[in-house]
Amino acid sequence: MKIIAVDDERMALENLVSAIKKCDSGIEVLPFKDPKSALDYVRENPCDVAFLDVQMFGMTGVELAKEIKELSPGINIVFTTGYSEYMKDAFEMHASGYLLKPITAEKVRKELENLRSPLAKKKARVKFQCFGNFEAFIDGGILKFKYLKTKELLAYLVDRRGAGCSSGEIMSILWEDEDHDSYLRNIRKDLMDAFNEKGCSDVIVNDWGKLSIRTEAVECDYYNYLRDRNSENYQGEYMVQYSWAEPTNAYLYSLR
Image (cartoon, rainbow, N blue to C red; front, side, top):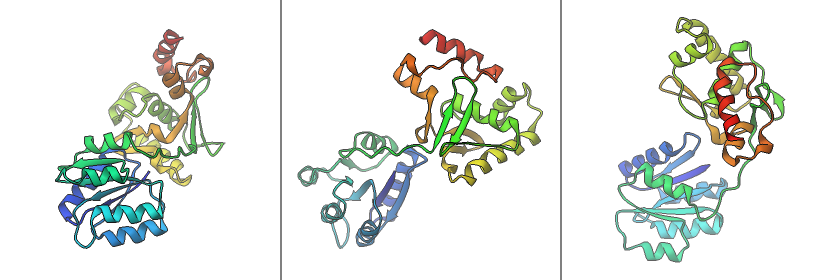
């Protein structure tokens, strides 16, 4: 998702950008203090959402929104302001949202979850097969690693469904102890290198030393089954090559 954020006050703009980024690490945010610069950017670059301050020097957010809409009719406009008196203008423009300052990540998240113009869902390049043997694919080809443990590390991250995994937790799963720091550094690097080489570095999140999968960026048979509870999506045992996956197998059987 690509978002532009426009506010002529530096502190307000920084706060807005920070709030947007907290909603999803995969969001690309382009900040602008000058409304005309933002307009020039939209002329050349498609965007999904525009967060616009209403009161700005030289051009109001409402004026900017009208011009942006002419260039990109499907863009979602979200106004940000410290005043409620501009809501009428926003509604007349069929804006997607209207946020009163101070802007928080929670307020932004609610707007992004309820956009007026739905975003086109992009086909995931990365796919994980969890039923049967675990396998990872990028653009239809099997993702290969230097070490077997790298694949197992990836499988565990997929199993954790976006939860951050510490080094201690990973070592206790992969080796059943915490005395493999050097080996873990090697397989972490192998994992990151494999995704970077394919241009899919955004799939793996490395935050404060914890690794996780950005689940919304991938396709996965396990995730589909948990979401839809459709028994047709359940194709046999779960990650059969890994002993730590046995509890998940028992859980999946209980859902059938």
